[in-house]
Structure formats: structure tokens, C-alpha cells
Length: 311
Image (cartoon, rainbow, N blue to C red; front, side, top):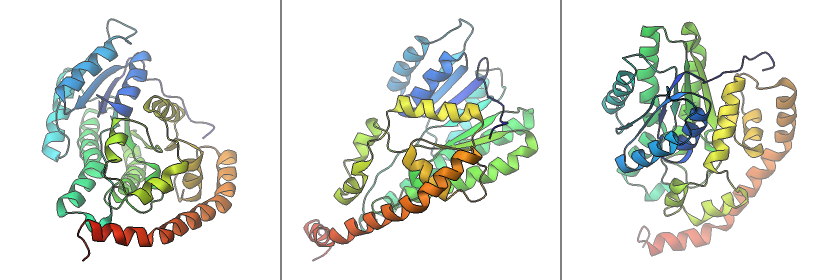
């Protein structure tokens, strides 16, 4: 909104999950450049070591603390261990801001999923962020830290289509959690933001394309995506401006405006224009997607026979 106070990370301790690669690393670099103390967590120690070297190259002060920790964040127990280690690096004090950038996707057809695919999809698209936020909020309240919690959802947190049945539900759930906490954590002067990036061209994107159905690729064909560096710039700019929902591109802004519900507006005039645009553009997009799926039926049935799902 027009009266939002700008956030300055200089001198603050920021905890970034998934900070060794992709969006997490890109936003960590920007935070370091702005003078923040940054703690990153990810699973792979080798990638963490390389990431820490990169962060060191961007420090602006010898007093900045730049730390890396190897943890899984899939369970509440693992997330708590990671959070305690991050706090210990700063004499037990809770971070001033938590950026939830960890996550993964494995797009596929719903009927092909195993039980494990479904469960893992929700873990990687929802619980991996929810557990960290749950633990961080408790400790921030106990210590009286008036900070920030940032979620990373997706354009697929506003809408969805074929191929994303084990990912989009979790991203929609993150929107629900983010909106709820944006309201509830006002009790403790803790700000909550949710970023909705479009496709990001990263190593994870290359990996997800290995299982992504062809019809999903076709529908996404017009989405050129963002680099992780550009996405990080958009996210941090939105947080600095106090935006509660941050959109990564014009497509996502259209869905954001048209599905805003009771979420705070970023800008009354611009959001009204986005909403007017979406009134016409979204139905056209939806009809186009439905037509592409209808046209794909024959090819899809042949695919199911080929892989042995159908006789």
C-alpha cells in the first residue's frame, strides 16, 4: 500500500532455507549485499560450501556473520534441529527474518502417482515451509522478536492445471497459511509475506522436466520464466515495500488480482487495473488450456497403454 514502511535488512539476521541453490541462494546474495547477517540451510554439504564461498565474495562488512548448516527440513523434528542450530550461531537469538525457499516438485499425471509420490509432493510443497514457520513463530514470540516470515508459493498457488496434482495443492495451502498468519501474527508485530513466482529456470526446473507430462509442457509453452536472480529481486523488492502477496510477472499479477479475496491490495489503482485486465484475460486463458487438454485425449490414452496403466 502507499503508506507501507520500507524494510531494510542491513544488520539483521536472516535465515534462508534452501539457501544453497536457486532462489534461496540468489536472495541470500542480495541480502548479504544489503548488509544482512545470513544463515543458510540445505541438505547437500558440498553445495552449501560453494554457496558460502559465493556469499563471502559479496559481503559488505567484516562484521557480517555468514553461516551454513546441513539439515533436512521435511519433518518437524528436522526443522527444529536446523532452527536451533541457526539460533545458536547468534547466541540463541531468533533470526529477525525467515525466508522459506526450500522445496521441490515432481509433476506427473494423477493416475500414475504412487502413494509415496503424493505424500512426498505435499511434503516438498507445503510441510517443508510450514514446519519452519511454525517453529520460527513460536521462538520469535517467546523472545519478542518483531520480524518477518516469508513463504514462497507459486503462480500455481492461485491457479492450476494438468500435471500438478501433487504440487499445486501444497502451494494453495501455503497461501492459506500465509494469509492466516498475516492476520494472526499481527498480535506480535511479526510481518508475513508470500511470494508467488512463475516458472524459474534453475537446476530444479531441469529436474522436474524429466517427469513433466508433455501436455503440461505445451500449456507452459508461453511462460518463459524468470531466472532465480530476477525472481529474488522481485521478491525482495515486494518485501521491502510491505506487499503481502508478491507476484513475479504480469501473468501472476493477473491471477493475484482476480483471486485476491480479502488479501491486502498492493496498490489500489494498479490492482484495480490488473483486476479489470484479468476479468477478460483469465477466462480466455482457461478456455485455451481446456481445449489443449481435450485435444490431447487420444495421445494421452495411447501413452497410458504404452506405460502399462491401461491394457
